[in-house]
Length: 364
Image (cartoon, rainbow, N blue to C red; front, side, top):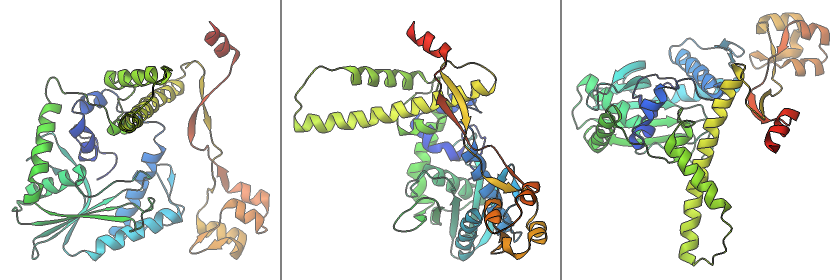
């Protein structure tokens, strides 16, 4: 899957619309309400580099894709992912648009990569995730949706094996960065039925809204009435100071309820923060809040070969070059470094500001 699919019912968001059938309809109204997008841009760049690697057109460190610098760490992850893909037999399909017509006509997306071994009647499905949020492979709705779409595209029978793998290089797990789910096309039938039921309701006239951990990534969480009501109820409960002795059973139940309430509050707050950032960027005044940028990383504006020609071997590093800061420490002339480097603004973050205007408003 590519993290920027824009299907009405995208496989990449299947885990959300299966649980909250109203989320696709609500998200369509706010397609850009997703924070500063830096994580998504980084994921897109990693997928681009991975595709180039699989096509035997490798990317060099320092190349830029849609404003994101391709780093050595990213390329290490790309190489590991490509090695896993290449180790599987079969005919490869890269960045292929597929429709899960057996689920619903509106369910489609772009699969990162899959390979078809006709002799062994096996489909190998690969999903490259460059983010930090851990994702499980077994029972994954996104993988199930893509596998069903591929099975429909190639008219595969229920006996065909499906070997689905999720590669997450930036999530530490004792078993390693690769998770695997082995099933069959026939074994996906319960998932197909559940997905079809959810898709039918999601595209109907009155889809249901259900809050939960899936709200965290919903682009419409800032306007969701159900999430807002749940959050306000959680605040009311937290402000209730009535003393009460809990039984051991009651203690466990209330802690579980509060953990879920905390997740709902976090989802609601993150949605409001994304909306506030969007409003401030448009020049609007969000009382008591502003945007700050972290100090960005200093980057070269010239190609590695040009940098080496200018400063010699002191800047060389494993087929690439060291950073501008490292170059100065190694003895490179600071003014010469400044001529072919720049410091871009860092990631944006929303911060509370204590202006006189804000203080007066809150005092009223």
